[in-house]
Length: 198
Image 1 (tube, one colour):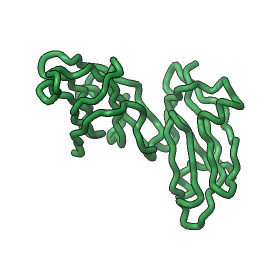
Image 2 (cartoon, one colour):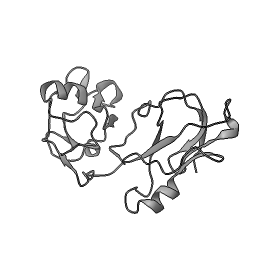
Image 3 (cartoon, helix red, strand yellow):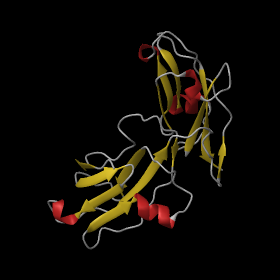
Image 4 (cartoon, helix red, strand yellow):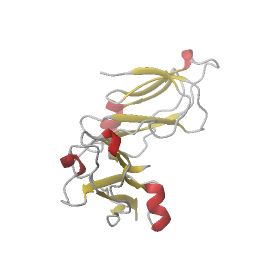
């Protein structure tokens, strides 16, 4: 089990871009009363059967108040906990967590729907960039916070992993492939769709 004890300084999406294309919703089971706040994977699995994959790759925690700077324990196969006695003021904030799983074709849950596929960029001298922010400039109907993304190789229609390239993807940012990260120095051309609320 990988559990990290960290000081939470920022609670945005993961500060690196994991090879992960499907986030759960945020869960907030516990409050910061008693000994602290505990948002354990096992508890959320029990409360929400069939919503969280067998082996999450990333967990993200955010305080419901937006206040950060606390010492917490966090790991994708553990979840999250904050102990009051470790905090300078003796009190944890209230946190919510979500988990991310790498899957083949991601699932777009009830209440959401897939957009069309977009292929805004081509594999140029630097790479292929199908980012959410740029696609929204040309297609403002794409939601600001997709639940999942689905990325295919444009020429074959196969899942992005079939190309065997080093890429970066996450629903809040979109997709990027940089030529410098590839063994042959050239990215494939990709297309992307987003899972958005209906």
